[in-house]
Length: 89
Image (cartoon, rainbow, N blue to C red; front, side):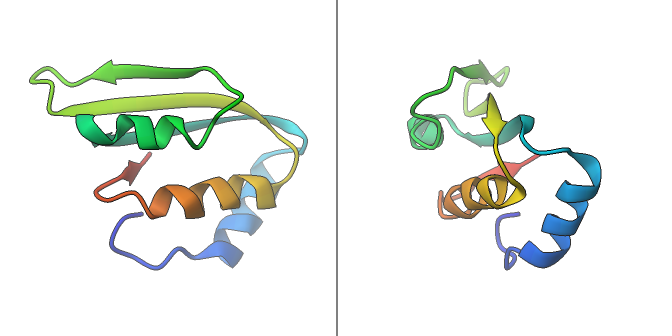
């Protein structure tokens, strides 16, 4: 995701084909450890899990949220895209 323009139309079609909204949606990201709180801030009402890499430089961030629409999911990814060095899985 980082470094490329976020393609919303194609992604929205894929989301809607794969999910019946509202539904639970799992967001997974990898960031530098010092950026993990920025990712956590994307999910103020949800539990966010962190798993540090073996050397501690990177952190895997996972949040499962109730997404009411594909637009909600896309909005989170657009906000995440602004975090320097983020990788969406």
